[in-house]
Length: 155
Image: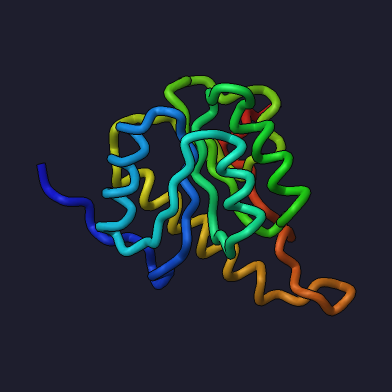
């Protein structure tokens, strides 16, 4: 198996918070992301993830959907209340997109394809960077302007 290509597209050293209660999956994901040039911090519980998110300058969150006490969507809701500009990607073994995905920026099934994950992360980080540079009507940065929910089921 070849190593994933660095696809972070200028987002070197972006700090990604990975949350998963499966330590093995978490460590594999961490290795993939670090080899692609990202800085990674890991949490094995929703509580630890929320604490790290509140304390650190996280650029993107990659969370499993099915955690112990909370779902990834519930975590996304809490995180968006704290830092609405930080993208949250739900990464799940479930094949179907949950109906209540609204607070997450994207949903991606754990397909086993690291390149798809890296491309998705790069796109979300690029979008965040571009949105942050656009002026909002009130003159402040428009972090959420046009954030896509591409993983959401269409009506």
